[in-house]
Image 1 (cartoon, rainbow, N blue to C red):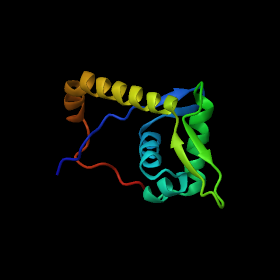
Image 2: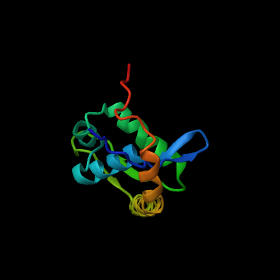
Image 3: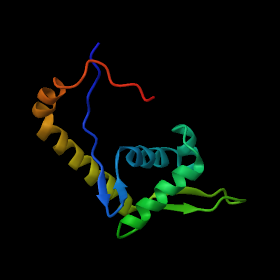
Image 4: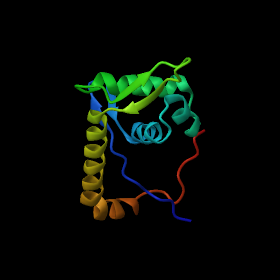
Length: 121
């Protein structure tokens, strides 16, 4: 059985991962749910972890990626800012370009990998 190989694009900024696949998934979940906590639940992630990822993104970029309103009687919530939507679109465009650029090389490189991925033990 052959396992799927995939290119994962991570953008480092200093010691931080400014953007990567997990953060992109979280941004899409926030967009769909309107909430960091609901997005975290949908990804089987703790709220604390999701909040830390959002805080990292907001620190790494010139403007906030996500705006959050505290909960309470008004309900709270979170949404991507216009700047956040721009970052999301540009990252996804770069990822598509990168995948297309290395597709043939990845196929050849994949032939060098073991038949099965190693266990995480």
